[in-house]
Picture 1 (cartoon, rainbow, N blue to C red):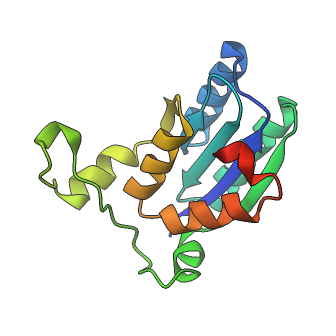
Picture 2: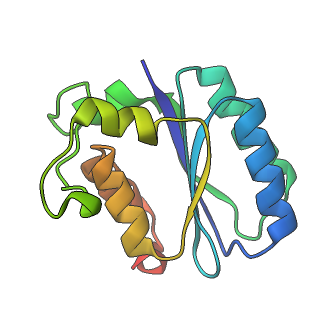
Length: 154
């Protein structure tokens, strides 16, 4: 079973803080996706261990990001997909760009994507695409719409 959390901040620009997030992702064995470089700052964390997700979120809190909001508390990824009538195993619906529109094996894609560590994207659109790749686009959209200031995600 996988666990995840979603955090929004005003922005993520400090390379020193990003380095701390990377170290924490590596030490807690978490997959982390950041939308950095400006407003908004978005962080997604996923791990097989709920304690690891909670520990990584604690590291983020200690970095004192401006307008820190825990949009989705650490919880089961299975519960997230059941909220939207999806199967408990996330799947990808996007073709791999490197294979010119042909899908590559979901197993090999998940193995690549699930490697612990930190990945950064520069736009909310790219971040949403990664959520779709992970099979949790509906969960992601619901969380960003639940947020009262969801226009910052657009």
